[in-house]
Length: 237
Image (cartoon, rainbow, N blue to C red; front, side):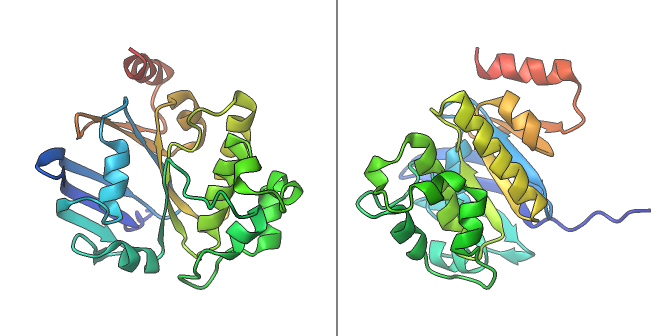
């Protein structure tokens, strides 16, 4: 009988606030080693806010967030990052005035095992071609690739990716999908915020659907096609 691996991320009864606004309500989910799990939902559902809460970036949060069995609900963002949890925000967080290579040399080494620049360029050949280009000269897709590459440099092995395909052309979405699948093959654990379930269904092991700051649906990878279509229709209604 196969034993189920303990969750790398175990979120239980998570509540979060922006100022006086209560925006997350009893959010619970698990992410196990090597899994790719998506948080799906419409705009304003609480997906990005959940990632911020996990990184200690909300005004107030309550509940339990275990990372590798260690409670982090009261930890600061820098303390959480040093444990190996990396966050790639929707705004990408790159330095626009620096070149691609300068951006890649800047992230602090938080743990052993950070990806080398040569390995980054093998994973993102577009970035190698643009290594001397400034951030403002990059396309939206190249900026997203650089944002992901930067967190891979830190040594983190658990990644929180906030809508990496948002606003990108289909050909770039396909490239990002290939990179995410390769990272999963390399052993990274990934929590991915997405609205595009057709994209998410190709890469994820399971999905959680959020609405109004609450988890309202859990969809395993083996969900039937009609279930996936129903969620897609809901997200785009």
